[in-house]
Image 1 (cartoon, rainbow, N blue to C red):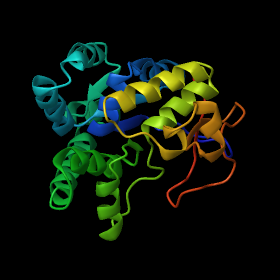
Image 2 (tube, rainbow, N blue to C red):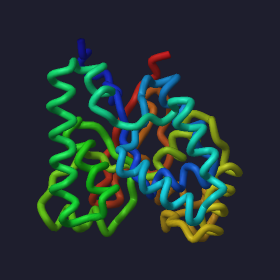
Image 3 (cartoon, rainbow, N blue to C red):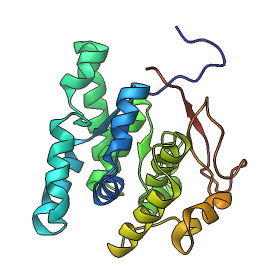
Image 4 (spheres, rainbow, N blue to C red):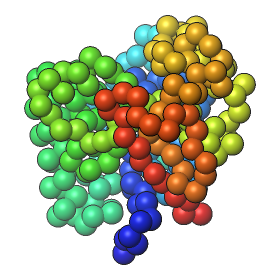
Length: 234
């Protein structure tokens, strides 16, 4: 039963390949584990992202392969399958939803890369958030009139939750930025050339614990800025 006024946590969150690479590069998987243990939110990747990560780590970024394997083996991240959905929704509904997600992913793949297409397709079908920051794909979907699940979460929204819950401190966030820059990865402009604490006033957190004081900007800054409130379940 849903209690009016009380945030309802999504059961799942889909993570796209670009965000997953950043999570692994910065060794930030503990944030995903906290979502599972404290908020009952399971992080998922689609099979297309698993394939893409295995391909990327075989050619470059070899250092993250073992952490990727460990994250999957511990079920900190799980792969979205028909069986996984059926376990929660029942076999008939699970099969239907999985097929819908796959069909939508194939449709979106006409316009954007495979990993992004199937990640967005799964998120839209299941009605759950996706963590991604592929602006080219997002802009293409917007231009095509696709109504994707909101809010669109970014790697830095996970970092922001880490700060809000005191799992991370500002020094940790500065190390995350430095690692991303060293690997030529995307960093939000508000944090790119300054310390994390200095960039916070220009950061609108899209993913927050409803029971804790907000961090960053109080009002939306970008057109896609919307906030998802979650609450602890344990």
